[in-house]
Length: 86
Image 1 (cartoon, rainbow, N blue to C red):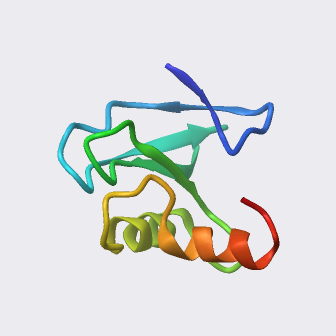
Image 2: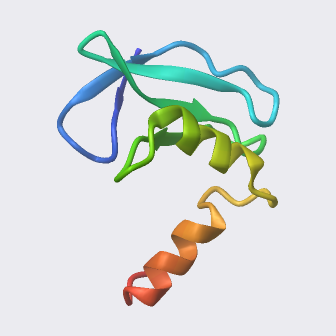
């Protein structure tokens, strides 16, 4: 199954992330794990990928450890609000 990574034209391949909260499945692009699908609630999983000075596995660990059942993790919501986004 193809999935878009961060709204970019590149596609990564994934396997099922399972139905349990904090379940994850790797996103593979060019033979390399570039991110994970992480299930943060019963809703569809969240695409989590590496960022500046953070590898994909650490990013997935952080998102899985965050409390709450919202689709957008609290640090991302706060960053968007501070930047004047929605």
